[in-house]
Amino acid sequence: MTKIAHVGCGYWGKNLVRDFAQLGALAAIVEPNEAQAAKLSAAHDVPVRSLNEVLADPQIDALSFATPAVTHASLAIQAMRAGKHVFMEKPLALSVEEGQEVVEVAQETGKLVMVGHLLQYHAIFAELRARVHAGELGAIQHIYSNRMSLGKFRLEENVWWSFAPHDISMVLALVGEEPVSVTAQGNAQVTPGIADWCTAQCRFPSGARAHFNISWYHPFKEQRLVVIGDKGMAVFEDSNPEWDKKLAIYRHGLQRAEGLAPVPSKADPDYVVVEQVNPLKAECQHFIDCIAAGQQPRSNAQEGLAVLRVLQLGEEALQASLKGDA
Image 1 (cartoon, rainbow, N blue to C red):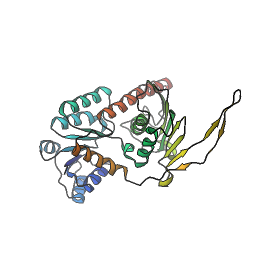
Image 2: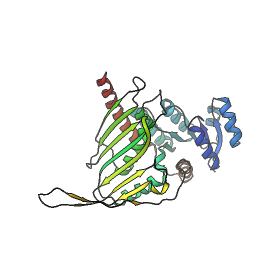
Image 3: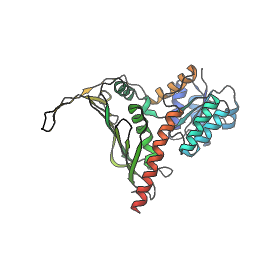
Image 4: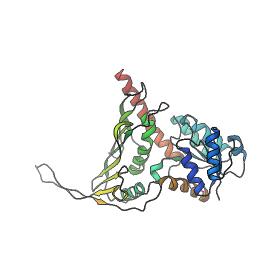
């Protein structure tokens, strides 16, 4: 059985500890907060160890990290050079240059790197991706994603870096190519210099377009991905509390006549029923399975780097827009 040590057991890390433990893979935790470490150690019957100890332990196959983003690249490289596979919470790194170094070390060492783009492992997104790739919606023309809520406000990163990686990862998986241009605008309404609202646009070589609207300063929670193709439309609304209504397929028609405006013929949505699976547990299981099979994860280092390229281009445009407001 694959043995994994998890590093960083805070707000999100404790969930990874729980799921790796439930899957029988958790061998140790690394956490500087002694009270939190003791609590999780007792709950999951695993030892608390130092990072150097787990790196040096030949019985540990992989390290899972939920640490501050600024540490991601260096920790991933350190772990791979110590002979460990790596699961890293998003983002892969904070610059394309750092991300490229992670990719190169993964290739050099032959170790797997998986980035925690959680929605890649959501059963409903997996169904949507399969339908798009099967051509059910036809050629993708436009995708837009809304990810908005009230809080959690952050000081170490803006909303673009905090929220957008999930949606960028989904869009790239659906379109199957990287954008040729990325534009973005935003506003720092709560904390000076830290954008809490952002809208971004991507243009792809195929002609497809994508639009992202993200905010943590919004009156209600909304998580909605809309995919428009030339044969159909789909809506993945993860904020819908009803599981069986999270994915809807619309087969609207369009009547055209020369010299006249197109007339739509509206159709009721077809809701797609998918077996309910915990996305985080599915993500953890995928990492374990990939190590056992020696296969690249769905959200591997290359995929993480592609997302990072979009993030960096969007960040440059976002910062220019904030300076323009000054």
